[in-house]
Length: 490
Image (cartoon, rainbow, N blue to C red; front, side, top):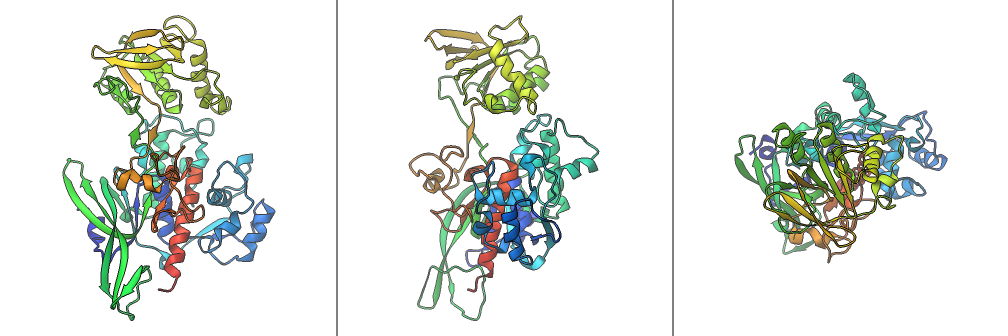
């Protein structure tokens, strides 16, 4: 068992206050806020929003985490539907949507007495899904929008003597920044890498009711015959080390925060042959195939299915290595819902290039994009064992293509298999699978606590927040809720 889990070996009678499942940007930011780092409003710096500035002046010496987030966020507008996300974003980066240069109005004080004991469980090193993204990929968001509190990404890039590309960064730099952040803020003792959670369930603990024993985290459900009955979460799983060895763990906690993101369970087409070895649902498989020389300039083309940014990233990666590509997707090229039709050309030139390829290239050889074939409005029917894919076009005609490998990149859903019924009972529509875009978890917008399960919180894409700049507002809401409950008398 890892040192951190050994230190926090708990029982149902003495549970840990908080366990965070997921160590991406959401989990890292929440760990920072629970480690005693406390946000106050700076003196002498006015927020460009006059209404918010007046509210901030009312309690200048009270940490933001102790104030009324609903009151502070009232009236704010922006690119997120979450009021808590908008609030934290505008406090950290005022006027950023207008490319303003107003500095953060927050100052950070390390106050150990406010720290909340917690663990952050991650399948890999800190950084979450960024560990699985090819390092040379360029981020969709501006580089300075990827930063976490009290250490701007731009400052880190200057320290590393690196430059942004068109105001954006590589995935490799982002991952290195997050891992540096964990170390520089001394959060690493809270992080457990290689931890796979297999079960989260509520259990009831009984203990003697001793009025003289203070437990600020107790939330008794009922008392009977001098015994205190309370519900806690049992979090079980295993630790996997670099040698592949596994060791089971089990910890008890008052509160669980789901910060797992949505990249664990790729969506499938559900067609015959999708389980053949040459068919994959991960973009990382393409990079591995290139390095192993399984695909190259003279091989059969790589089939990429999908019309989102991950599919575009795969096309750019293949193009970089001169690997031929067949690109199939169901939508029309000029469909307004296509993500490429929503991105500014100036800021995203490489994605605009992919969009141009999709529109102009319907043949495989010749034309402006040699080695690329676009198949709009084509639906995959089945794969054959001799590495062919059969498609049906918009006229109902069948076509077969020989390929070297296939990448099905049509999105992903969160993997909540460690929860009862895959967590569907927590969703807005509890009769449908959890989906970050179509059916997120049903939470309180100012605490991010589940409306269906007390003590269970969700942040990031699970709560409908997708971009790093906005997932931090969920971390603020959770931290504020937990810190306020800590201060309530038992």
